[in-house]
Length: 496
Image (tube, rainbow, N blue to C red; front, side):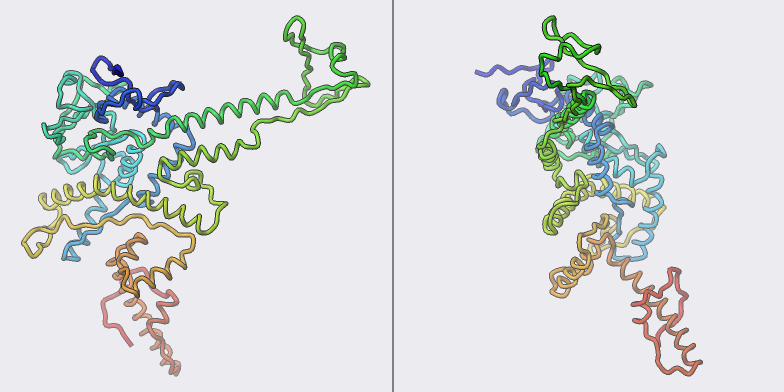
């Protein structure tokens, strides 16, 4: 019978994430303790904190983790962030709501530190390094970002069976409250002070992998040991290479090893009473005159060895696979591979980022839109949204525009999209949406282009007629040449 090891709170000691333990003596914890604990009690608040600190430390100092985290945030949300496109039956209301949201994004953070794009990036990086995060919905219409470690058990409520790592649950497992703690003067989370925030006033952004899981585990957790081992290997090889470089020369004699004891006045280090090891320090810009039967030979460094680069690549491919991205994207190494391989790498990367985008929309952005737009209508900042056929308000109808991703061969991709549209296999709206644009905005811009081009046609044809030229210019000539104006056209009838 296997004896289960537990801590003072009855939590299992045998089941844990290896990344939370600095020891190199790693064992398969699932074999030692196969009892089916839930994820929150398997890891516990203490080890979850250690995991977070390990992930944050690597985010600060490790170039692989820092680069991957930054690229995830940048590519998931893009340069402008994921933006809303209202989709009610009233185009004017949609335009008003989008314009109002664009202004609110700038002041969304009540601390006046982050805009909405930066808060989206905060949510993405929090999933990687802290496992989860939250946003308190304030009465004044702003949000308070909360790092995952600030959601914790209060000191006086640690024995409450319905509180799991800072979240109060109902008997059925529904999250009811989140205990948010401030930081003290030293920057640590103050467990003696807290505020219980009801679920209606809190957006909890998490990506659990188990149905019973309450708190999130950092997505970087599975690669912690691999990254640390890779980092140690790099440091060890660098140290060895430096040692090899410092011992760069050896003196050889024709008389062989027996002559080594009588090479003249040289410094030496006694390796033992009967095995002295002699050496001479060669200083820069000095000419050394050797004895008649002596020669100097350069010592060749064996570090790193011939297989070192290939082994490093294998280790990095394992790390990349755990993050669901190709090795080429992790290292930004696109100099090798065929067109098909490069395309497959890009498609895999884009699919991973698309999943993260939908997660961010479902967990954070959609609820933020619902809360803030409804509040704006209630406070009179926006007029009421139109009603659908059932008489229900359409204020919640919105789609989210994600950043546009480039392909290896944009021309081939454009031709493919055109064929799909003609076959009826894809709509124009889907094509524009995949390019990071909304079909209504595209059509609106095109109509403005034609209006401006129409004005130019009228002016040009009048000028040609005055010169006696009979050939007339059409709108298509101006559109094809890109002769359009960026400003709003005047309202007047156009045409030939």
